[in-house]
Image 1 (tube, rainbow, N blue to C red):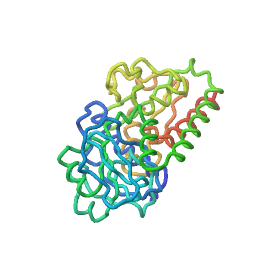
Image 2 (cartoon, one colour; image 1 turned 45 degrees about the horizontal axis):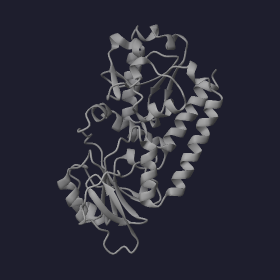
Image 3 (tube, rainbow, N blue to C red; image 1 turned 30 degrees about the vertical axis):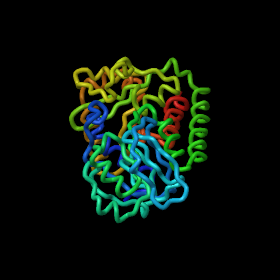
Image 4 (cartoon, helix red, strand yellow; image 1 turned 90 degrees about the vertical axis):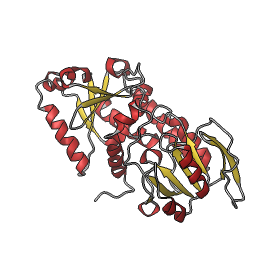
Length: 326
């Protein structure tokens, strides 16, 4: 069994969320019902954060905490502890993996168990605006100071990391994550003639193949590395996850093709594996130039992820499969 504190476990959760990502990416007001609120200790650094947009909400306060700060967010201004210790937060996309004994599930984010959440006595609740209504926000605020962020976490993940680091007093950790990422990015770029390489990124499920536009987490990392993308993945429209019909499978072609396939023994990984094998059995697959040149690589679910840890793992893959293989 995979431990909940391992990168592979987080990857599996990201992959499970990604099965519904098409709805989340193309329809901003829908939300995957499998996502949850979690309570975690302060040892893990958030990968997302609150927005700077503000309304006034003087009713939300931190109570008896002596050191506090004002945080502006999508539903108001909330007074929170300077260094919160018990944080309830929505979605694995929003956190780095905490230790197994630091996490509790309190239900569907649209209708969380308020009794369970109150019993856990958080001193801060974080949630994306996508997941909750103002009425729910009011109920959550009675339990603990609640910050609702309304940001594009797909392309603005670095800014969101910094904002959340400031919220929780984790600026040093965020600075180190950023420095590690930028150093690795420069190392990759120094060894890569990126302008001559077109990178395609695809994911498959039982129904279709989809590709990621530039307006996604992985799109920003590839763009930062200077890598070009196939025309279908340039992201001129708002759509981020683009379905490709089997008849137009050539639209996923490129110099290099990365296929996201969770490297685990979970049920979802088996489903993705079966779907990929079905696609690979299609005669159109073998007509792709990237297949004929043997430049197709399967990568793990952190390519779905958001944050510096996932970005560094992606850069490791680019170094291994593009730089070292050339």
